[in-house]
Length: 116
Image: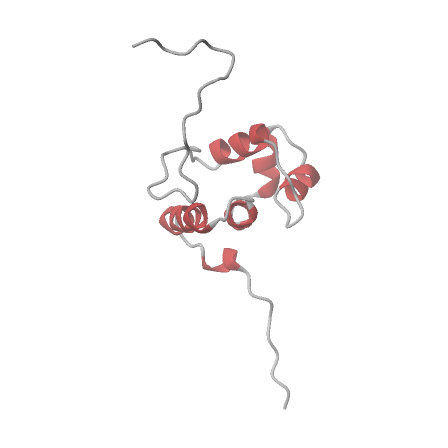
């Protein structure tokens, strides 16, 4: 007898707001900077809510919402802010503890040199 498997869907495992927050927190820590992991996590969390209601609350149509959060989507910052706010979340930026490339402050070359 052949075994049947169904496709894994992370949204099946989001049972509470704590689950959603944990998934999104992990996604922000694991994303390599291209937004793929964060977008996927947002898609799964959004699917646990009523997508039609979420679309109404964000002012986006449902198709555009699905497209923005799809694997090939590229949502704007405005869309991300609308979606996170509608989900009762806040998008927050904070310093990275160990950045891959430490930023070096550069002096603009068109300013006169400081005198000592």
